[in-house]
Image (cartoon, rainbow over all chains, first blue to last red; front, top):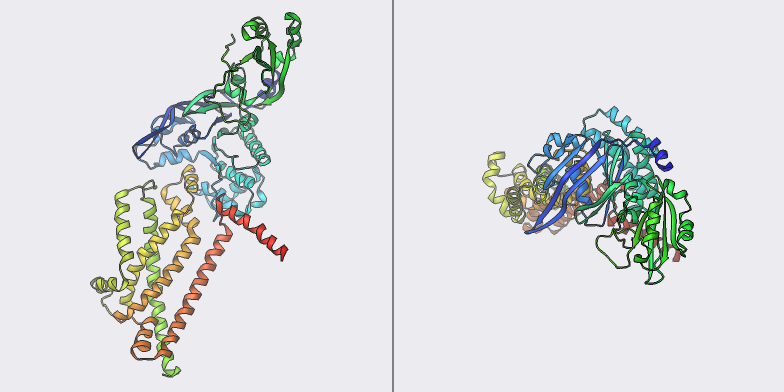
Length: 374
Length: 245
């Protein structure tokens, strides 16, 4: 796979897990009612990767990311960040003890609404975490200016947040999050309040920081494009559970993966009831073989192409095509088998509607039947 | 009554009002600020949630707020004597004024601090800040424009209360208006004191508003709140009006 080689050259991902949650459960109680926001979430984020958690609002993404630095106390389960069991540090009371606060200072966090202090200048905002760490004035100012330079806002040091655009505010937020030299950056819908161009530039910045500093980024989002453009791995959340997870490559190679289909949608509906619609996914070698014309010649069938695209998803070159064969699926078992033998991933598109648990991505995929390939 | 007779009386009374209001404001702010912050912190869902303490402070503040000042002044006489050694004069009046001002200011502080965006608190928590850091670096600085406006309101309320200080021989402009203007039938004298009070209140209000607005303009609208959108929507509208005219 040429894509993978290209990727490995830049990637800083190691096999060490830097964020691990196990059996993470969060139940909110209000006026006698119980709402389960997290229902036994096991998450493994490898060192140096950008990990995206995607899901609809109410799926539990926010609770999950807030549990990672214990802004939210999990009801059950453990959170380990950089080898430190934070849930053990938290103690039983609602207030954060010294050890937990120290651990938090090594985890950066950026927010959807930036959360900058309006009474402080940009520089003073970036210095705030350093004040909390007890650094000297000289050191604070040096570090703050260095970070503002890194995010491209060196000339705005003396401005107030109210004078900045949304994208600039988020850059300040990122600089501030990096002030404590964190190994891990948590991003809570960091681009959701921004326009598409600004979103792209902020994502690019996060990607660059991930590469340059070896920073592990855990982000939550409801935008599939965010996952598509910068994530190495992704997880789909629904009703407090992780439904699918893995590296982008793994997900794309998983037959029937909702996340893969949403990451890389191909449109087109069947032209009649007695047709079989297949989604064909190519990665690497398989993409170079003339499989469609081979199929047509070998089995003497007419193939219509309903939709096709080649795209880069998470740094991988992937092709996907939706084709239509005459006859029902039962009539096409042999040609489908042929395609699978060629090393292609085949999803049979089911015509029966199935609305459960589809992500709210702009282009929701056609429901897929779970047709497992060997 | 001639001006030369009035002038020393007015000077004396202005000075007394200044002393009474100045000291009582200072005490009300120093004591009311932590009390107001504590009301927010100990509330349900607060950083130092303590429902019992919150209820107790809230009740004390409510009683202090609703008590008519003249009753408070009389009721506090023995406490005043214990603090100042006397129950008569400007100094003695400072005690009930300050006691009356504390709950008044505390409630205003509570409202101002509640307005601070909870996201900022969360941000500082995520940096490892403790509650004291949050109070010092977030709650108070971010609420500062509102706190200044609250102080202005408190000063003006205390000027109002100080008119009753005459009851305990505290003097001041209000007392002058009652004794000379009303009891001695000198309407001219009364109008002069009324005018003086009106000017003093206007200056204080203006200065307070100016300071609050200056601070607000500097930072202000930090978050992406609806306030920002309202302001933005307003500006082009104003420009359109200008073009039409």
